[in-house]
Image 1 (spheres, helix red, strand yellow):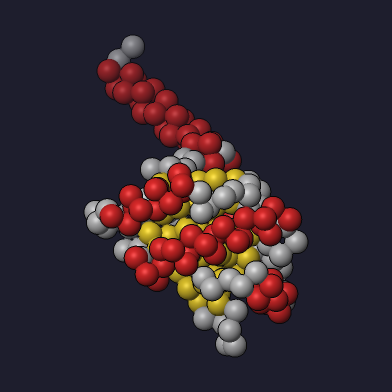
Image 2: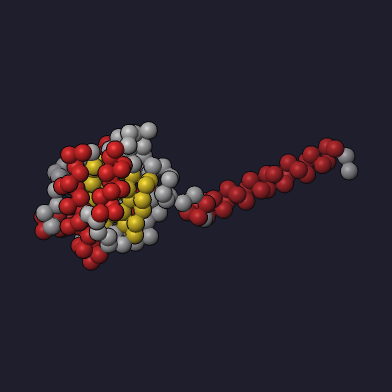
Length: 186
């Protein structure tokens, strides 16, 4: 077989492998590039509950330690963990912790979301992704259920990801937040 023919076959095989990889990346991207501990936190866009709503992105919290909680008013485990998130917020907000709770309730639910925040006395930032459970934030963060919480360091890297209700004011979580607050933005 001539050298040109071998080169053509090799290039053809390389193109086929690249095509298969591209197709697999599109079809099973979650498995090929999971959004987990150590990954860069994807940017997000959500809106405040005020009138008019103001768009917020991850960049608005750059340089802070962020506890990003995705939740919904209909979610019973979300109700369980909210008081511990509020306690953590009250303890560390002045040191640079930003708690951002993004509701994935459907569009038009702002009054119910505000009522939920009032019921629990929540003083941290509540945002809304009107795309709901199928919204961009849930997709980009590869959320598999609610509540799901992502801790993002000052450097923009995911430091912890947790599915389900959790005591965010526990000694273990307070130690994690204190460590992250002590670190620079890299």
